[in-house]
Image (tube, rainbow, N blue to C red; front, top):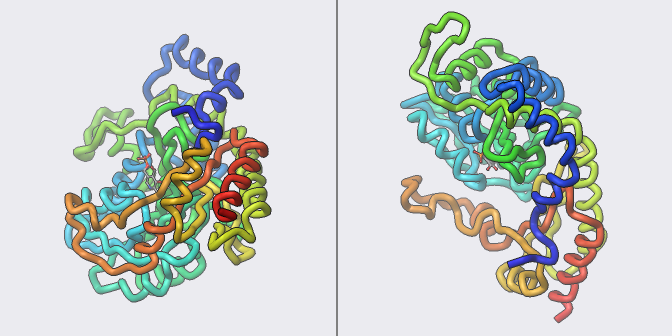
Length: 368
Ligand SMILES: Cc1ncc(COP(=O)(O)O)c(C=O)c1O
């Protein structure tokens, strides 16, 4: 179905950057620069500088950024890692795949980890906490880092949705031992396929992730130090991401503008709750614009009829997917979020006219 307002617009995204992107890709192809060449090193350096860490190591997905960070941090069987249930499944799968136990806690109204729930979940087996900065908003890292210090916990940040977001002037991905980002095409900085990156200030962790992503091999000596993975960020993707990184500040500013336009149009409508939260320390980048209503399914169907594409992140709690074997949980906020949330069109290509159309459609729905 062709939507009048698509959720994202990858075709337009490419056309807006065509000459720069084409030059980056053909540059790699013409030189034969495919695997671990200068373009990857350049991108890693630029991304680290943007996030504010000493190192960045490109990998082939946000999932592998998490998995390799957890492994490099030494987490494994017998360890508990506290994270949220309200996240993309990859966060939890990465913990499971290193053999550790994911301990799922609830989130607060801002969709991020509830710090009191984190504190209650800490046991003598807790080795790490894995906060997820969801929808482009950083968790309360002041409280989280204080708790982590108090209980001697490793912090690995899932910053897949929060590149450029900050708390107290510090960017997502620069607080913990490692920050994990996704370059999935529809992320705020997306490639043309899968990709991800790990940020860190720890030289040892950076080196271990760099070895693990390349089958454990030290490229200088040919020595295999670990049983690793084939999980590199492709050079061509890195070259494209390096081009796009230069546009990121402008795209983030546009997302913030779109968010404030939604806010203006929707702040007094029906039972809607909008994603604008308190706290001057937070700068949100609006990876997603998520609203809540008890009439979610009806609203979604109505918007679809009007040609507005929306998504639901996510329609049922992760533990209800029985194949994941996560046990049973009672996490009231997570459960009601699953019933109530709907994500509106939001991207660097979303236009003011599109936002106004979405707003008037939503207003019409609640007027009926
Ligand atoms: C919160 C979160 N964690 C992890 C991931 C995994 O990233 P990827 O799809 O690049 O593996 C994503 C993205 O899809 C995500 O949104």
